Structures are given as C-alpha cells and as structure tokens.
Figure (cartoon, rainbow, N blue to C red):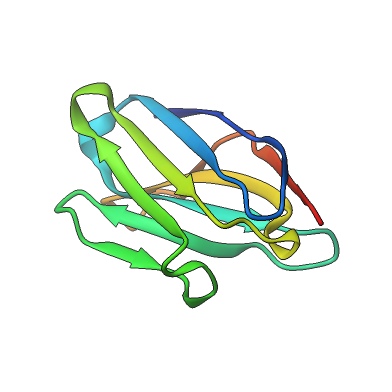
Length: 118
C-alpha cells in the first residue's frame, strides 16, 4: 500500500505561482512513477505531469514551459512548481502513484484545489 498526502493548493491571481507537494509513504519501492493529474468542473481528469522512478518526465503540452515536476527521493516527495498560472489551470489537482505491478491499481491523493482568478 502507498499513501499520498498533498499540500500547497490555494487561490492565486493570474500570472502568479504555486507549488504543490505530494509526500508518499508505505511501499515506496513498489512505485514506478508519480505525477499530478487535474480535474476541472465538467471535464475529465487529465495528466499534468509525471516523473518516473528513473527520472524521465512527461509534461502536458498545455503546461509546458510553465509547470515543472521534480522530486526529492530522500523525502519521498514530488513537487509541481506552477508558474504563470492562468484561469484555465483552475482545477482540483490529484497526486498519483503508479505501481510497478500491472495487477495493482494506481494510488491517488485526496486532491487539492487550485483556483486562479483573472
């Protein structure tokens, strides 16, 4: 089992910055990748950015150049630095951990609200 605890959401004006954190605990070695998804009202959940255990990154085109995903392996924590925020970035952001085993379901955090005002 893996537990994910998110922090760092909030309200910010357009053009501002926020940093989300996701601390993982439990069976850390069973994780293949961690990342962030977001879901806006009336829309499907979408991948924002992910980083594999090997350090490979996958970033959505809509946030490239503005958002950066990083990790602190010593703290089992993944960060999402969000700069130049836009109103369309408003959503609930969820931390995700993908297991190495395809027999296991993904793990999810509780979600943190990010609201960008215009």
